[in-house]
Image (tube, rainbow over all chains, first blue to last red; front, side):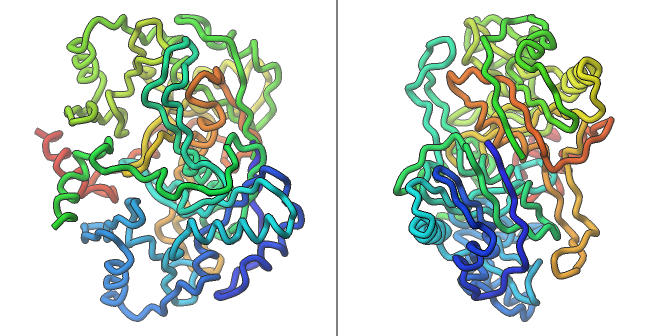
Length: 237
Length: 237
């Protein structure tokens, strides 16, 4: 598998995303995956709000998330089934503006995919929209898949056999996040200015319609349930 | 960045790991990272226990972890500063044996690194030992770094400037886990039999002595603190 981050100029708000991508990507091979950082998706969709004050930001955090509680460190939120700080609202890299996450990253990924498939006349193309998260008890951020299109984001080993011929009962692999992490590392978080990346030879299955629910888990089946327990109780009220 | 998973025969318990690696890796370039799945590290270190019964396994889970509580689904444990099920003890791929995690994956990584550096006469070499974990509220597993040597596992952007010239205050990137995820995806979880992988052109800084504490976080500074709160209280007792 090969990952190549692509250096670009700064993306401007409300700019046409496809034209921007075509400036830097002149060739797209069959079975490749285009990775796009969520920030330029948000900017292309005008998902920004001029920053006024803290109170406004808190109201936005609540509005943008399914669940939000203030902790000592941050506003801890659950949005689109993911745990994150401040509903993913970002103050960095913006002209005094707050950047919200894309409205629907799966939909945005599908739109990009349809456009580029037509332009490059290819059949199999994946599009992956990334952001950053942290693992519990770990320092530093890792990439995460906000949305994707054109490939299966979850690989199911259930029913397959292991190297001793025994049936594997439990194993599923979170492909979308696995691809997002290393690619976000290659794209960088600081002043690298690499909002795009291309992945070749990824061990994924290309499909026409990705299932946007496949990575979501019933909180009751989550390993972390005892940790989330108190929060889920509040959530249901 | 390029990732190449390496197909091997089945690794046998107590086999010499360096000899095994040398069977499949005939050349190691300067600045590459060798990835090794924790399972064959454990097997090479004889970290297995014949499975007797459930009670024995539960006792082992408690012994191997810093914290363990039984939940509806699994034994939720904290081991080496990471949240995992069953202290990482694995029943699959073993000859009726339980496979424990390596005793000290950072140390194991350093030993492999020293050996291979000498054999291949190279200066910069990373070694990364991987396992699998799940993200909160996400289906499927992703790779994780259990231990590593020869490179910085945490990249610090604190004090650096963003693309608008403003100083970044908070951003750190968890490099080790970011590399582990995609590589574990390439290595596979089922019958692929690819316990080794090579990474070339990774955006990492090679160093002589990795800091095994750099990815650990003070639980009090963790985003997930409100979730872990109840557990930490029990832990301190």
